[in-house]
Length: 313
Image (cartoon, rainbow, N blue to C red; front, side):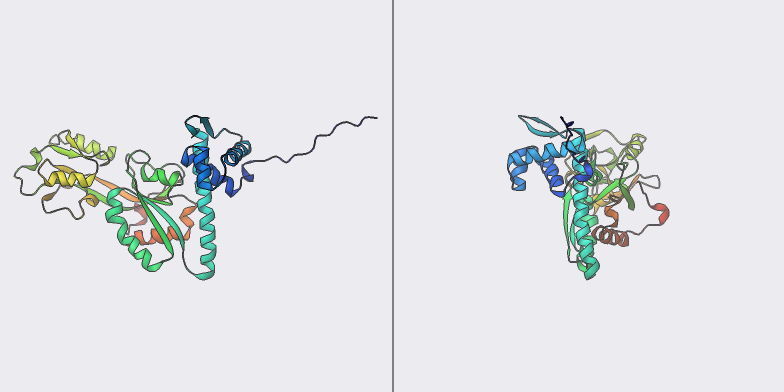
């Protein structure tokens, strides 16, 4: 008598079964743009990485990479998966650092900060100096990111940074899933060659990163401001050009810190525009000890009232 064939039971694998090593593999392929480069980074073989990616895709039920002669390009699903993977791996490192700190009373671990140029030059250093004095076990790396498109907030959303110094509000909304608080309001001023008798008649020098749409609206209402005739790479180059007599500029306060004597700064009056500068992080990293320590230092240097805080979840 023939017995009916029974299929062997196989457990269903899901995203919850992903291992940290699989997450590292996913991130490596996304960052390196190919299996060979990812394998070299991980110290593995190309076939092992390719096999691991197929397993990850099976668990997630989605194709993560387009394969071709160009390498491995993340699909939209792959980009989101890699962003989540970076954040999960970062939380695992924070878990270990915070668990050790609970026993020793010390705050340690790596802290990745993304900041636009003037913030990296003038806003972060005093906070980082105080952080190093109080928590020498925190290892900080700062990456300068242009505040265009996703900007510094995008670095945090993609899991490439733990905390970003960003422009908030106006034309720079936070990506969904991030939290942030305003640290300071940065007024704009007219900057021109020192001693010039009629600075408002000069050509305008500008740079793409200068300001958001809310400030551009103010600019559009000022009939004395011409279209930019010179565009520079960054605010430092703008200051140099203005100091050389090539034109005037309208710049925020951080960019004018330590301005050379060859330029003069004129207040634009009570209706002058300003932009909000603050920090952004993820809800989960907002509880990590290293992130909280830097946020405390930033807030102590730039205290604001609760009504002035901006939070997006």
